[in-house]
Image 1 (tube, rainbow, N blue to C red):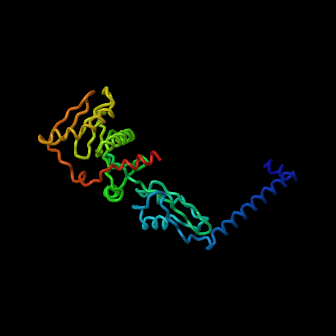
Image 2: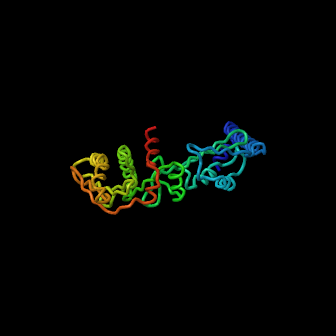
Length: 282
């Protein structure tokens, strides 16, 4: 009460108070004016352009985008809260990232990047070209690999939290094998932290733990270089089923009735890791 009495009895304070009220009123009127102009029908969204950030869109359909716009877009180009639309599009399992821009006076530009699979993970998820895990529909992922990108999707597996480590090791093994005319089909890190891989003829290769004296790449390189020779030597006896590289020098092998699966026979000669390697080296 005393403060109000002091304000009332002080002309300078009253002048400052009146000036503040006037400034606030002017700002409110300006904001209302801008909003009124921005809300005019002339600025209603009349066109939405969709662009792919990278490869052409294969899984995000027009119907998906229409639904996101219908349920999330309200207002004009200038007043619409685009965050809601962005969230609805980003919720699509195949969308890696999405950006939305306003284009004067009544257009929106939506740029979408889809996940592009390079490998599968043991829990049902997939790795994209950036080495990130995503949840995709399995049939769609396989169709992408075999029909569109014409490569084999390696199967990776390992303990919880080992995804990045397994992916890096599998990529290194893939480069080494393909340089010697082979292809990595699968790689796993077991619960005892021993490595195992499978190549394109169904052959299982036991690499073992990292504690072995000889570097695993050296051992795998020696096997890859000698595999054609070894196949020729044992052809009359049977088919190579398993190779054990858990020796500092040399390796052991076992014959069996291993038969290459139909998916392995039909797959393209290269691994989808080629795209991961290409993007990383770009």
